Length: 415
Image (cartoon, rainbow, N blue to C red):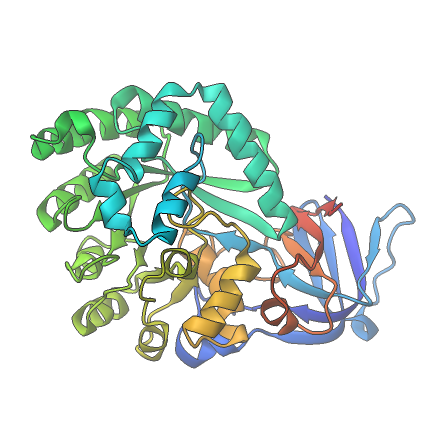
């Protein structure tokens, strides 16, 4: 809980100046301080600055970490994952390598529905065990806060089982875990001929139960052709808001359906994916102050088009980056890897990707008041990387440069 990190070669603060996120040119401003120090007290950041400005006398038992050969970043915030699942979908990876598309696999009964079968059969204990293992590995790569969605249950019992498991992990694990209800991830097989019947189940049963028990911070919906249309999506999100869940939207991933405009209309915290967003959708996100969460790992893994990051940034939309870690479309959870892909395939600068993975990621979870930057009073969530400079994090990919992850002032040394 208490820690002094001294002699830091380069400290990247992403200082927010009391703003919830950064937009436009401000995404380049990551607040670099050379030869710096950070003092953590009782899980919070108590001081930040240059070492030659530090004058406080520290107690003899204050733990210290020497950062003289390191760069320190805010803890990474992964604001979009589906990391609670059972089994894997490596067979689909093989099919895609032979030319099958994501839609082809889904139409044949694979995809999301394939994971649904596995999760329905798994116990809550089994789901927690596998997810806890992934959480531990993510922290080793610098992720200190992660959102976890349901959506692989698609019936009352299984969706609640997932929510309960996510909430228990939030209590038991070091990482900050944010639960999102995504009962509207796909139409389950038993409702294939009655999709509106499933929507009614989500609205009338699942959401009220989850809301009454306060099991989810957010309600999300896969707003897409063949999944949930605009009318169904709006009804689900409105129901979630009525029961205390802020809105998120899987928007315009496979087609320009208008999910971004819907996210703006319902006051969503974030609109995620956006590979097929229109100019009208970009303007709607800007006007409503909705965070655009981009998922470069999905486009890379599925060989799909990338979201228009440059257009979004230049339009003043607050842009976040997340992993979308899941067994079907992105079996990867390294946020530095997502930065690399964003730089090489989405023309984002290293500075913009750092902002997108920290402060703006926290904003996509309504957490930027306490997380996402290294500032006095915020949670002491930091990442220590043994690299020559902050740009190296995205530049030198394929290896883990993180030596220490610090959560609420508690030091986790990477083996």
